[in-house]
Image (cartoon, rainbow, N blue to C red; front, side, top):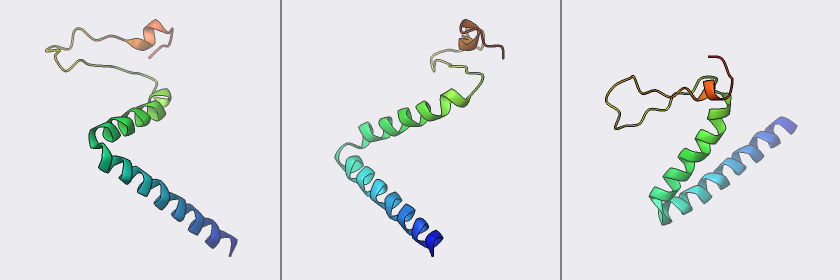
Length: 75
């Protein structure tokens, strides 16, 4: 019975978070999209060992910047 109550509480919390997010999205879709994107990057980036950032205007692969090399991290 404890497991069932735990799952119900988690599901209700998920619904509440989604409803709040939906309300914010309906007010400002682009801002909400960008905020979700940035929050996801903040969660994911620390776990990635090697990072390569490419400017969309870059036409060749030569001008890559190895951010890890600047921090003394070996790929």
